[in-house]
Length: 180
Image 1: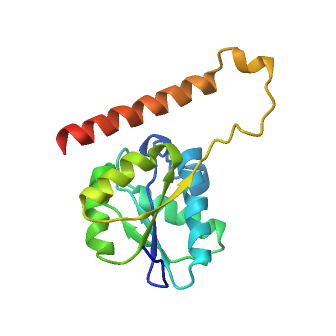
Image 2: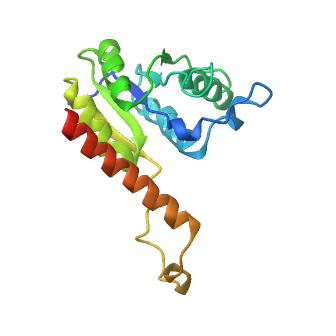
């Protein structure tokens, strides 16, 4: 797929990381690190594709404010208001996002920004909708440059979080393949 000035950059938020929104906090304190990582990458990618447009996707899952609106507020805060994203406000999960984004993007080239661990499932769901987005992974863990430390052999909470994320994605892939 060739990217052009018509390209769009879509971002899939993480519902679990946007569940603590409150109206008395700035928008950047109402999203979690996963969503923030995806949003920062989503703001970076269009800067390399002049004329492209940012598309933020996510409905109101745990709160009356959509994830797309919250991410839009953060994007505007980070860029000083110099961003005008398209918003998809109705999806509840990645499958919904793929269906709703297909109607927006149609045949235009499309860059899909999501967490590296989420790319395989998201790409499968988008391809089921007839799209072939260019993947742009965010939140990439690079362990290749780290020296081996004795602490790596002891259990840590961060390791459990990675296992949980992997299980979530493997079960999600299994579910998509079984249902779809």
